[in-house]
Image 1 (cartoon, rainbow, N blue to C red):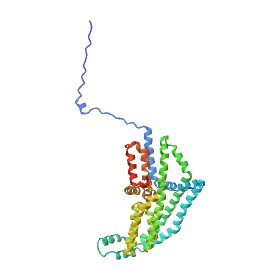
Image 2 (image 1 turned 90 degrees about the horizontal axis):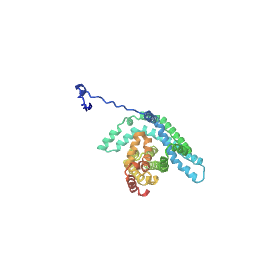
Image 3 (image 1 turned 120 degrees about the horizontal axis):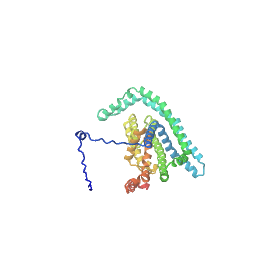
Image 4 (image 1 turned 135 degrees about the vertical axis):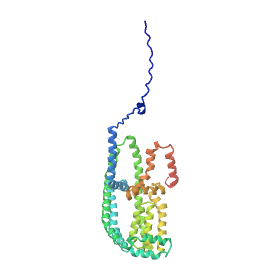
Length: 378
């Protein structure tokens, strides 16, 4: 007798009320590899190190910019068959000569005129108020501005100015340190560059070899051009103020040369004190100083800067202003000085590294826009 097996259908058991109220929990386990954890720790340590050594890194970056500019002297010497050490020596001698002239001639004059100006602030205040209209918005604004305690009692400000000698010595020592590092960059720069290049894969090495000469050209033109434009600005300011018999002309001229490094913002920083002190001479002198300073600003922006820089910094005025403000907020004066060649190097980075990740026509369109804005450099 054969026994036929029966099919047994299993129905899912209905969950009990307690189980329905509390469904089974799913446990998710995340596993982090030790390599990833070590990378995160290394990145955090690197960020902390950069923050702690920010000042030193800024000085090293300034030295790198200076060495790139001075490398042009070394190249000229090499073209004439002279050894590289001659170019390095001439570069160091030229920078040291400029520093020596500044310290021996300009610094004492600036210190004397600075103390004289601060000690005579009450008289300057009275002269300015006497030459302004008796009433009106200009008079009200001047009264609010000139009510500072420094005008009535300049002794605290004078003591603070005298205490700036330590800050000046610190700045001079840092400047000499930048020069020394720049000289070492000139001596060992090529070897350091090839040593760092060996860390990159072959494809990236080829891109770096293309990018470095173009970036060096931008930086060298920027540093050399900035020195020329600042010198011209300071000389022009001194001639104008001396011709108008404005007191403390040397102090104002040095200030104009320094703040001229800051694009757009520098003009407003040096024209305000110049016009204010010109008021102590006469309203006509103040008007002439404002007109002549404004004329030079236009001349510098539309003639001197394009000729000196050779249109290598193809940056709009808005880009320059925003970049300078960002650099100032990030690293003060050093940031405002160094950010422009970095921003100007963006087209090179875009062409070599970002192009594969952008739309196919992005780089050609950007190049066409820049060519239209700067046709003389095409």
